[in-house]
Structure formats: C-alpha cells, structure tokens
Length: 305
Image (cartoon, rainbow, N blue to C red; front, side, top):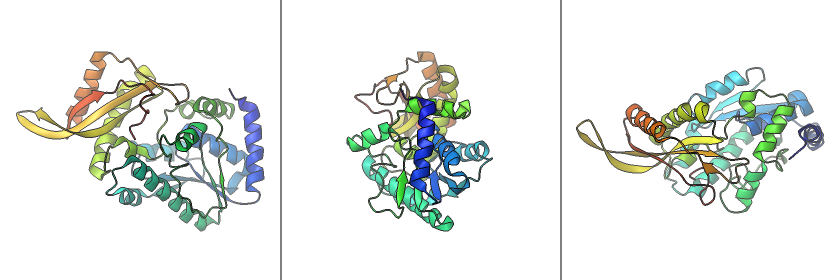
C-alpha cells in the first residue's frame, strides 16, 4: 500500500519537473482518479492548469450538472461534445472499435481546446489497472490503448500510473478531498457506451441512462457496492398490459472489489432484485425484461465491453 503523504510530495515534484513553464490541460471527469490529479496539479502549477470536463453525451443522469456544482470553485471548462462522440460511434458494434473511436475523439477535443489556451501538455488520471488491462489485451482503455498513435501534445503526464484504485482513494484522503469524491464508484471513461452492447444510439443511451440511475438509486446507499450499474444487452419479447412487446433486456451488475482487478457479485435479496426489475420495466416502457449478473471477475470483466 502506498504511503499517501509521501506520494503527494513526490507527485507534486514530478508534475513540476515534467511541466516546466508550460500550460497543461487535463481531463476532469469528477471521479476520484481525475479529481486527485487535479488537486495534485493545482498544488504543483497553480493557474497554469486548465481542467476540462467533456460532456460526451454518454454520461450518467445529472452528471454534467453535478460536475458544475462540485467544481464550481475552479475555472472548469465544460465542453458539450455529445454530437461528436455519438457521430464517431455510428455503425460501430465491436467493443474495441468503440473504445478506440472514443479514445481518439477525446484526444481530438482536448487538442482543439489546448490550442485555444496555448497548452502543449495533457494531464490525465490513468491508473495501474488501466495499463494492465490495455497492455494485456483485455480491453483498451480510452486513456491508454484507446489513444491514437499520433497526438499533438508534447507530453502526456500520468501521476497516478502506478497506483491501484484503493491507493488513489488513500491519496484523495491525504489531499483532503471530500468524502463524496474519495469513495465515489468507478465510472468508465467511455461512459454509457460500454454499457450498450452493439451499436450506440441516442435511444439506447437514453434507456440505459435511466436504468442505470434506478440501479444506483436502489443499491448504492443500501449495499454500498464497489460498483453497480445497468447495461443494455439485447432485445427480447415481453408483455405489457394486453400487448406483446419486443423490448430491451437490461442486466444489473453489482460487485465488491478492492482494486478492480478481481470482483465478486453482491448477494442481493431476491425481493430487492424483484423491486429493481419492477421499477425499470414500469418506468422505462421500452424495457421488456431485467436480469441480474452473478458472474465474478474473472472470468467476466466488471463492465460488459
């Protein structure tokens, strides 16, 4: 386990050395990884840090508004790029192709915004499991294997690259970040795109955004999972009222883990699962059925793509 206080000192010094006198843009998503990076960089280089939140159109319900409120005390730039990301995903069904398209779009948006402020360095919250999974061929993370080979930044700075998630949380505590940030559930960089199997469309994203919100509403406070979410996994038949429908199948996933490298499914009482299924099918008319995923990691990954 990392010594959080010593890590903070080392990381601040590293950022200062890497950046020099340059300006830096950074990807701030509101999760613990990027928030820790922002806090470290702010201490290291002050107002030469330009934090940017990209609304990809693939975020959780209310996420953009939450980020604006949570980081209202800093000069956060909020970029609405939903049309760009959905356009880049059009027609793609292969998970790796989707991740690569999202990774490239992230970089291009950051390059464009960096030019506006004269920044040539990119800071991002890559952590060690991101590198392991990307380099090991398990899946390409948008900030590692999903990044395009040709980028315009002179440097990509990753101060958390050797830390696991639990170590990042410890560093967040040492930095005095709010508990809400320290203990927030992981959310994938590609967003809801990896919770939609097959082609990503506005309709599918709208469905899974609402289902995901219901899953979190039912599970987070009561069970405090390491991660929980909903995923849209296909189409199936169902009956609503007196009518037969052809609707979406939503899978619920809830796991406990220490560092994300392994995970075990939560043992949720049957009556709670029934309530979640009833809410999702009642509140989202196009959903025909709901299932609960009981697979550990390994053999499964936590996310579906």
